[in-house]
Length: 258
Length: 261
Image (cartoon, rainbow over all chains, first blue to last red; front, side, top):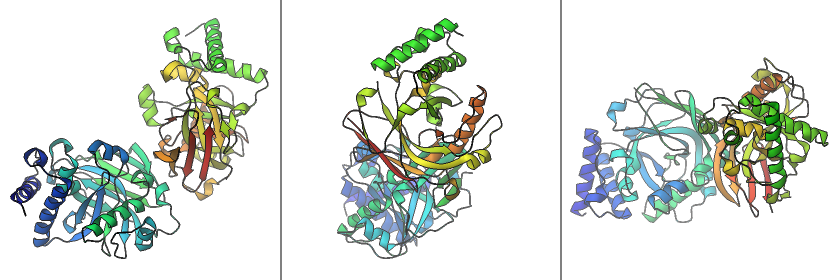
C-alpha cells in the first residue's frame, strides 16, 4: 500500500476521532476513485481489527442530479458498521458528530448472497427477506460537505449512523419505485419523493452494488442491510429538532437530535 | 381595489389572451391596486361568459396548495379555479400543444364526489364521506400572463392557471388507501423527471378538498355530486411542448398518460 493511502486513512480517522472537519484529501494527494476506495478499505480494515463488524452497505450519489454535480457515472458505495447502528427511539447526540444530516431511504434486508456480474433487480428482490424504511445520519469529515467523488469514497461516503424503522415488510407485491415518502422536520413538511428517486428503483440501485462488489471479489452477504440511497436532499440534524420520514406501506421512522 | 369597469377590462384582456394564445403583461403590473377580491371577480366575469356561451362547470381545482408554490408567491393560502367541460381530455389522447400559451404538466390525485359538500364547516370526515372515488390524473396548467411571472392576484384572475385535465379511468375508493401517502412518478418521454407524494398538497389532498368547499361557500357555492376536484400536484410542474409524452404512475391508483402534438 502506498504511503499516500496510509496517510489519507490516518487523516480520515483523525477527523472522526476529533470531530473536526478537514480539507479535501484530493487537495493534498492526487487520488483517483480507485484510490478513494483503497483509503476506505484501509480504514475499514482498521475498524474491523478494533472489533467492529460490517452489517451492511450504503449507496451514495444515486440521483442523476448528484451524479452530474460530482461528475461520476455511477453511484458510490460505503460500508455500514456495527458501531453505526442506532436504536430507533434513542436520541442522537449531535456533539458526537461534526455536522450531521439526515436522509430518508428504503432499506433492504438481504437473505441470500448477491455477487456480480449479472445480478439483476429481479435477483435482488428474490434475495430480499424484508423491506423497511430507514433514516441515515450522514456526517462528512470534510468542511461544508465539500468533496469530490474520490474524497467522499475515501470517507466511507459520509457514513455515521443508521436507524431502521420498526415495521418489516415482505417485498412481494410492493412496487418500490412507487413507495411515497413525506419528509418532515419538526412536523413541517420539507420534501416528498418516491423510491424511484434512487436509480429509478431501490432494487436497481442494489443490483448495481452487487455487480460493483462482484468485480472487487466481494458480495452483498446474507443478513446485510442495504441502505439504497437518499430519496431527498439531506436535511441538517440539530439538537432539539427531529426529522420524521413517513412512507407509503412501510410506516415511519424518526430521528431526534439532542 | 379596482372599479367594476377595470375588472371587466382585465377579464376581457385575459380572455383575448387565451383565445389568441398570446400572453399579456401581469395584471399586477397593469393594475397596481388589484387585490384578491378583484381577482376572484375577474375570474367569475370570464366564467359567467363561458357559461353564457354554453360551457358547463364540471368541478374545481385548488392551486398553490404545495408549500413550495406558496413560498414562491409569498402566500399562506391556496387559491381555486373552475373546471369547465371543454377542459377534459381523454386518457391516452393526443392534444395540440398549440391550444395553450405556455403549458406545464402536474400529476394529481383527482377526487370525484358522490355527495354534495356545502361549507362552511366542512371537515376531513365530510370529504371522506362525500368522495365517491379517486382517479389518477394529469393537469395541464397554463398562464395567460407572460413568462408565468405571476403574483397570487394574477393566477386567481386567470382561473388559477387552469387549462386542461386528463383523468385515468380506474377508480379507487378512499377506504382502501391512505390519501396522503400515494407515491407518484412523472415521466416525460419515458424518463422519470419528478417524484413526489400526494401529501405534498397541504399534507393530505383531502384537506385541499375541505378547504375548497369552505372557500366556495363564501360565494354561496357548493361542490356538487359528480364534480371533479383537482387538489394540487404531487410534484413540481414540468414544461411540455409538441412531441412530448407525459405519463403519471401512482402507487395503488395506476397510471394515466397524454401526448402533445
